[in-house]
Length: 130
Length: 236
Image 1 (spheres, each protein chain N blue to C red):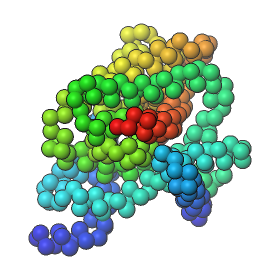
Image 2 (cartoon, rainbow over the protein chains, first blue to last red):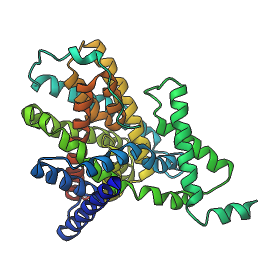
Image 3 (cartoon, rainbow over the protein chains, first blue to last red):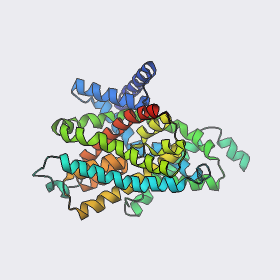
């Protein structure tokens, strides 16, 4: 029942987010609004409820499967965007290389040096998305 | 035969079963191939699904209508992302200065570079709107794409390529420039390569993984707030 209670909490925050977005006419999705609300609520509360932890872990593990039907659509849109594929490819490949370089430069420039930065590189951790 | 197929497509059961089966098969194939970072399980599963739809001559829109029952869960799943965000708050408290300075320009430029490049090459407004959220984790990116009028399948394809490209780039640069700071590498992977980069960061180590999740959530939130606003202001 723990997972059901947690799921109900998540639905509650989703509805709350929806209400907030609709009433204030915010240009963000209701899921993101719900995510911010639950994060703020947890910070104020100062403690993570077991039910919410169980339900959110279960759902986050399913994320990759939930986005899959959208990815399948990629194989059926070749005609819709005919003539624009060069623009798309250049934007994605060159754009990503540039943004990786920028972020790396910003982080190296502003991150304080850490004495124990590389010692943890040998330990392995589990995967978040399986 | 086609009558039976149409009958089965009347309920969402077939589409859901197909999605689950393809996803599990994709995971298995991913393990068999030795967990290649350039080919995430989602891509394998999507290829399998697309091939099955084509073989059974099922229309993508019919499949998508059935799968909408699964996609509905993306709402609460997005809310669930607030939990790991809360668990990362101590990193934000400890390093708020470099994070506050680096994140907004990094997230804005990630969108700006690709939109500017595509615009210069004559892409349509719909393509631009589909490329803009390319560094954002999928559940949040779907919301953004709907807000600014992009195509979700095109955005998803862009997301996959961005994740793979970012992971490859960071690996190459880390080796060439001899960067070993787990926090820097993780953050860069999460900000640019969303979930695909975060999975790679967890392979580097727990610190890199934590910073990647942090970079991914903050990029998602920041982009979700600023991109629809920028779109409104620019009037695209």
